[in-house]
Length: 391
Image (cartoon, rainbow, N blue to C red; front, side):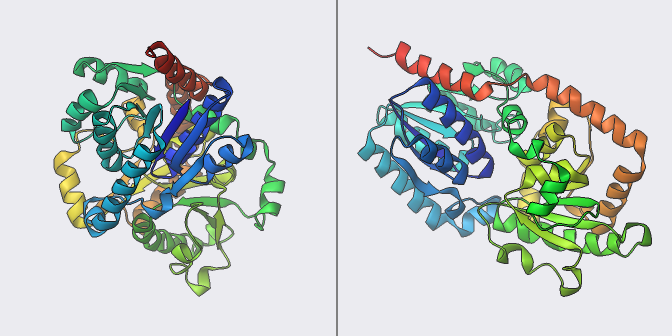
């Protein structure tokens, strides 16, 4: 069968790549055409089967209301291009992965043109913009969810779904980075043996520009303290970004203790004493790897003020949402300051009881997400949905 998959950001690329592995394993005739990233492309190349990458997500990923407005023309052009490509290729199913601003437009189009539409990694309608529920009902043939708390929500909304666990568990547990020794990790990435503080600034340019200035001021303050002067701060560069996106924020006097490593976030998290993480999938990855963390987020003032009015959840981090309480602290907007980050990171390092409680909560979060094999189970369920409805 022909599968047209759309992933618009780094986390979607990760889940899309694992879904593709499952599709190739379950359907030996699978032909996959996709909008995604390097991970999905790597799976495609290793299978040497199908049509492959159409558009890389780095050319279109934006976040926030003001950022979307500033790039509206380009986004609309991408939507038109995607619609035309779907019509031309004529797939058996269009599989949408998160990225709701773009994917809902494609869902409506594909449904009206008679294509089967699956939505994988449900849009976070339980957090904001609940009116999108009507679009899910109208334009999506089957919803595939990945968080246990979503089951109760979608049951109440009367939306049929399939839940097979969370694919992030297998993505992390099967990662070679988790089996790499610290010595090898340091050597391969040209790092010395100083203790590591991990800094994850996100994958979008506007996120990086917001986070990095605070990160660097925090690093300067911590490095100036005699007891922490021997630490190094390792920035996990997003695979789709360039050195220029980060280096302009690092002062010349900081280059000895601030390092930039691309595409190795799992290894950085594994070997870090603590991590400061921009809200998103990376925070849940830190939970599953077992890295003590503090989550941070800041957007433009306009974006933040609008978000306050429409976001309905108590927490912004998936781990805290799953647990229903704070496993780790969230520093949002005006609370995201160098001093607040410094105080929290020091507590993560020095307060053993605080750190141990966090790690204990991590295990509860992991247990709630289910076991391994989610991606393969979802792929199999998708194929069953398609074949059972074939006349």
